[in-house]
Image 1 (cartoon, rainbow, N blue to C red):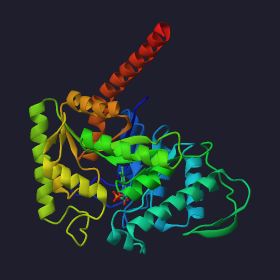
Image 2: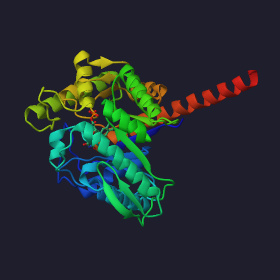
Image 3: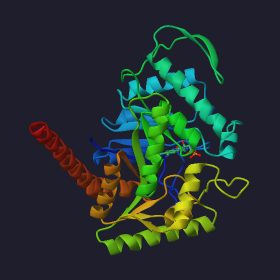
Image 4: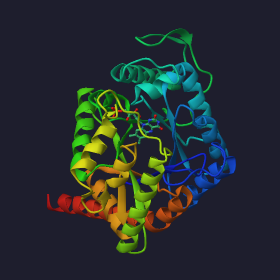
Length: 376
Ligand SMILES: Cc1cc2nc3c(=O)[nH]c(=O)nc-3n(C[C@H](O)[C@H](O)[C@H](O)COP(=O)(O)O)c2cc1C
């Protein structure tokens, strides 16, 4: 199976280690960063969503209209719009990008952050709403006759869209979350299920949960799996580890100065979303796992999203990523701490090794299949 690489489409140059140098929406940087991904072997970039952040949909439209090949993964929170409206936005964006859109539906892991834009549902209620929302969006993308919808969260009558996606039957649906409610909703609806980078054993456990949920929802095909890391690479192992310690030092320093945003803690002092709780528990149990996974970067950010590092030479990091490929992960997501330079380095030095090794593994599998055919 082919492997794909997902990078990040930030709208400014800030990260956990570096203050941003300009405005939150820096038009020139947004395009430069996306172009660096396109020119260095990446398949797709994620336009993330945050309550106060620049709206990712027009940013994605801008990038798609200026670049030829790079695919778009647009994060979208159902609470911020009605699904009829969102389905048209997505279809229009799929037209602008000539079929390069996938939508990442975000349920929201934190009540306070959700409340900033008026969402008062509990997390489990939000997952039920996301599921209904995705269902409605899929129907609008594929239905050419007016229809009514009577659901728990949305009711509307006589709706038909006049704009349809280029991709047929529809664009891909991506989904993330690590709680039982997340597995149930994403297992039923997602084409791509996204996980934050954890050790191999824990990743296998989550893949099993997604597969079981998809099966319970009556699906014969399971979602493709995507896993996200923060690679820290350098020409030698020693230099990579020096860089890793420098990186975590910078995160801690900025955190002490109150400059790194952390997931808001719930009443028990823990992040509310299961994904971040898992990252913190893993970091507490150990710093290093498997070939190159390093957890202090996750601990230093309070388990804020994609935060576990893979540290080493490009060869080591590529081999570590291949271990995930061998588990059944076929979309590898990566983001550095210097977003632009790290996207270029990873694209130059890591992606070609992984693609070559994947091609070898696939050719060997085909050869083994042919041999089994001859012998059988
Ligand atoms: C790869 C990935 C990307 C995500 N991107 C965003 C994002 O841009 N904005 C956001 O608010 N949440 C984002 N999330 C959070 C999830 O969509 C979800 O709301 C949260 O993880 C739910 O928590 P749970 O683990 O308790 O189910 C992302 C999650 C994953 C796995």
